[in-house]
Amino acid sequence: MAVPREPRTPRRRRRAPDPRRVALQQRLRQQTRRVFIGDGPAVGVDIGGTKVAAGVVDGEGRVVAQLRRETPTTSPQGVEDTIAEVVEELAAHHDIVSVGIGAAGFVDAERATVLFAPHLAWRNEPLREAVERRVRTRLGRRVGRRTVVENDANAAAWAEYRFGAGRGESRLVCVTMGTGIGGGIVTQGRVVRGRYGIAGEFGHMIVVPGGHRCECGNRGCWEQYASGNALVREARELARSNSPVAHHLLDLAGGNPEAISGPMVTDAARAGDPAAVELFEDVGRWLGIGVANLAAALDPGTVVIGGGVSDADELLLGPCREAYRRTLTGRGFRPELTIARASLGPAAGLVGAADLSRGWG
Image (cartoon, rainbow, N blue to C red):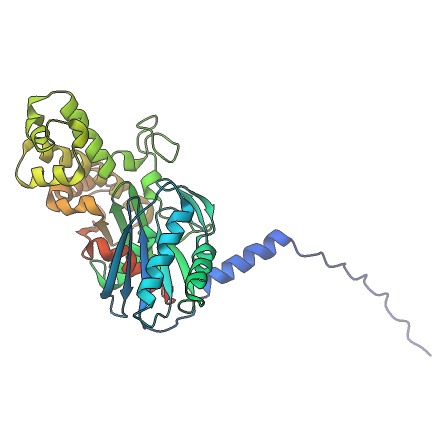
């Protein structure tokens, strides 16, 4: 006698995969997958608001060859041509394994496209593809096994972590003070890039709602109070006011307030000019307030301060440390981080970009 079978449970129809979820999973895999391609010589390119610096970097972080060009800021194509030109020139004398490009702007998670650059004319610029195409056109071949695009501050942070002032620190934050403020985070040997690739844009944290207008479109960004632009703006304003304390700065600028520059203010402060020292105290105080905010959010062990403004050294870092200690949440009941000046100087960006292109970080 046949045993009656139990009725089958209807099989659930499988849903088609969500294309957005699939794309997200692919991006996450790309972000976490790193293929190290050796410690051979790599080209690093650092694109700033005024210059393109490029160099060949060995596996120990040493720059063995270097070039510099002016940045044609109004033309994305002009910048790409300049990058291809320096890559071609460096590759003619070195067996390059990879190329890393550090760009002053928001770089996507694939490390290929500059989404937005406040100080350059780039909006959704496919920089990696454009540079590789130009290099192939000029040389008839590609250079190295791959090209990657990095945020320039991420590249500088990585260089300081691997070879500079942050060496040995497991949780590092780097703040670069130049035309604006850039930032990078390195945690346990990895650059923290964020969900969309644009983590670390500390310069555009709003610290004064309704404050000075920023090139990013907002008002009151941190970089409007603690950067090279902020230093120069305040120095020129002081000089325009005909204040007697500004006479030395005006003399250095030939009597023209608009001729005052950041290096001029730095030199005056080093010589003991009271007005220039006070300007650095103001910028340093804003810097320290921002560092205290970063400590509250990220709890790093070390914050490295780099960029051209850091050339003032303790004239800047002294007031920064004082303001940090005065502003730090939970002060007196928590460990204080170390605030150190970057040690690699202007080469940090290109050194970090080159090293990251090998597969580190």
